[in-house]
Image 1 (cartoon, rainbow, N blue to C red):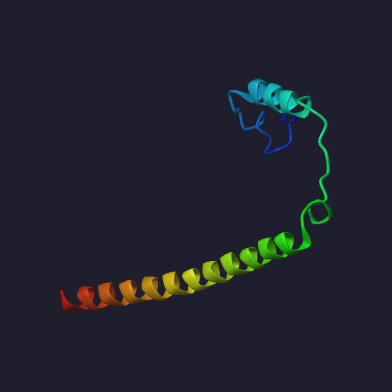
Image 2: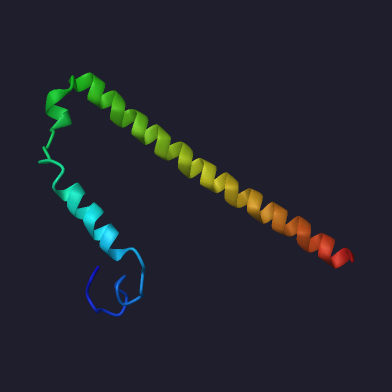
Length: 86
């Protein structure tokens, strides 16, 4: 952040670089991270349900994206027709 590299915050003259560095250092010194093996610590069926839910969420997100794309094209077509009618 404090280097003179072309895209560094300092080189781009970001005004609060020192404050950002201080916040990052405070975060790094906040505590020692721990690694949790959730699969080991949680009931197998519960963990399985969690991943099934994750798959459902991702599936509905893909479906929603496909629907949003159809809506976008439908609106674009409607406005193209209106533009031609002018």
